[in-house]
Figure 1: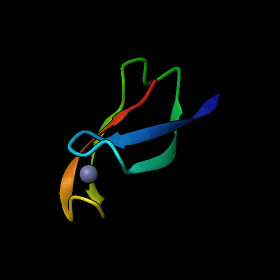
Figure 2 (figure 1 turned 180 degrees about the vertical axis):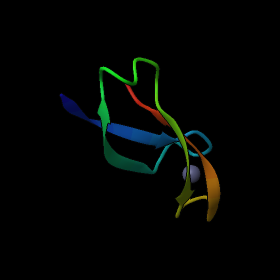
Figure 3 (figure 1 turned 45 degrees about the vertical axis):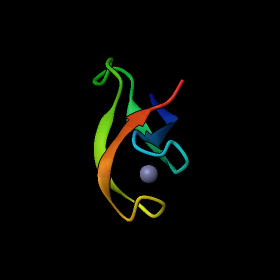
Figure 4 (figure 1 turned 135 degrees about the vertical axis):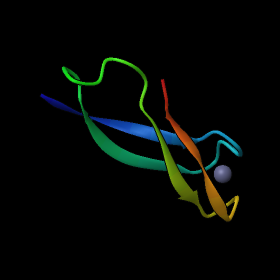
Length: 49
Ligand SMILES: [Zn+2]
């Protein structure tokens, strides 16, 4: 089962990505480096909740 989650910019907390994750494989909070258009650089994004 894949669940839709949101990845939030850890720097400004304004920008979010929607993505999916496999709940079976990924039990921890997802963290991924992505481009934030508010910060205008690559920053770590963390799963919200
Ligand atoms: Zn940001």
